[in-house]
Structure formats: structure tokens, C-alpha cells
Image 1 (cartoon, rainbow, N blue to C red):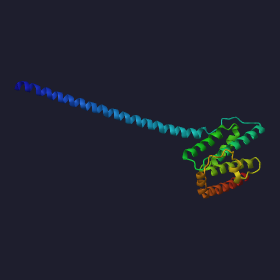
Image 2: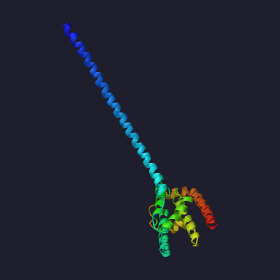
Image 3: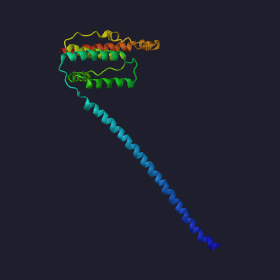
Image 4: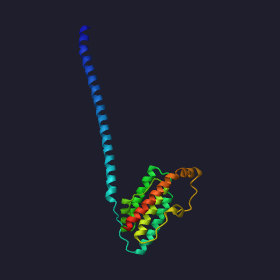
Length: 215
């Protein structure tokens, strides 16, 4: 009996060692799997950062119009008239309290508008203005006043009549209204001081731009 036990004890010890080895091997595999997951996550984050960098770089390197010139003065004038109407109407409908995403959408639209404008040289002139005088997106009033101000820069360069920006919102009211309730009107009233300050700042900007264009 004692001899049998003596033979069994070493076997039990070997089994215990095997179990411990297997357990450590499994834990090691789990650790490797976890490390691989961490590496994969790190790689994905790196790819995301690279995509953002590429997107940022592509904006700066592709802001060049690929549209041809438009020799016909009549066609340019007709296109300009329609484009300004679209732009002013759109800005007059822009939210008075836009979200950050809506502000970015407007900036991106104007950027693409300048690139895709059918008259290549006209689009180039517009982009030059955007570099000096970026679009204002804080609210409807500031966006509309910005649009009117840059329109007047073009008017002055072309020897056309300067537009009265004080009535820009009323003049480009498409008659689509009805979406603004009393609560929104109260919000606009509560922000009247801010809008007035913005209006005054943009008026000063318009005067400054006019002087520079005239000089």
C-alpha cells in the first residue's frame, strides 16, 4: 500500500505541474490577445489621425478652381445675378442661433461654392476675398451682413451701385416664413444688442473694405 502511494505521489506532482503550465500558457495567450487588441486600437486611432490630417491638407491643396474661364460678359453677368440671389436668400434663412455643426456646414458650403463656381476666374476672385474676409457664421444677421459686404466689394470693383445692407434681410425674404414662432422671436429680441454690435462691426468692415478697394 505504501509502495503504491509512493508511486502515485510523483504522478500527482507531475499532473499539478502540467496543470500549472497549461494555466500559465492560457494566461499568456490572453495577454497576447489583449496586447494585439491594444495594438489594433492604436493603429486605428493612428489611421483616423492620418485621415484627418489628409482631409485638412486636401482642403488647403485643392482650393483651386478647376472650372474654365467664361468669356461671355453677358453670361457672367447673368450667372452672377442668379448666384448672388441664391447666396443672399440662403444667408437670410440661416438659423439665428446655429449649432457649431451648422456653422461649419455654411463655411464648407461657401468654400465649395468658390471652387465649383462655373466661372473659374470669378471663383478665384471670390476665394481671394474669403482669405481676407472669412464668412461670419455666428447668426443669421452676421451671415447676411457679411454676404452683403462682400457683394458690395464686387460692386465697387465693377463700378456698380453700392447696396444698402441695412435692409438685406427684408429684401431677400423669400416669403417662405411661418417657421418662426413667438418663442424664437423672443430669443432674437433678447439677442438684439449682440446683433446690433455685429451689425455695426460689419458696417465698419464694409467701410474699411471699400476704402481698401478704392485705394
